[in-house]
Amino acid sequence: MLLGFQDRLFGLTGSGISVESGLATFRGAEGLWNGYRLEDVATPEAWDADPELVWRFYSMRRRETMAVQPNAAHRTLAAFEKRLGDRFYLCTQNVDDLHERAGSQRLHHMHGTLFQSRCVLCGRTFADSGLYERPDSMPKCSNCGGVVRPQIV
Image (tube, rainbow, N blue to C red; front, side, top):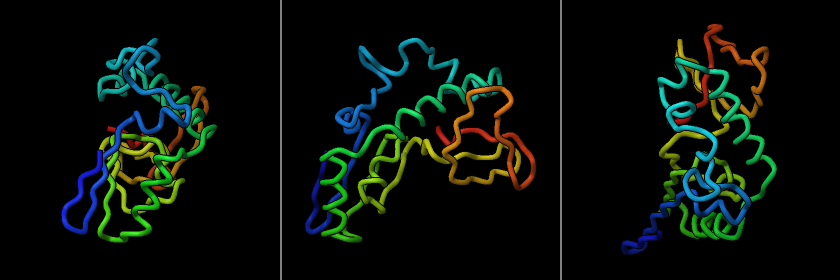
């Protein structure tokens, strides 16, 4: 949904914008939650109970996202930003990076970002496109050696 005020524009997007690129929404008939319980992969309790399952789930999301490209809607929003500069701001509920790959820079991810990780000990966040699908591949913080989790709310 786009709302204009005078010469400013604010964009708000959700998972529907990435469907045309080939990504499933979290809800719906073919949603990502099918086959997974939200409580098992996307809560603090899920992380505490089984970080390997959480990483497998988000590694699959990373793999799927790396295989697709931004669509016309992502590119159109990036073009608005290019034309309006700091008079445009985009907020997304999405965790994918398709807005960035389309060229958006003035962007806020409400639910975190798929390609960032965070150390649970020191809180350091960093860019990360790793796929952690096996127990022996679980990441550790290069700063303090702590356990690293996806930077997703």
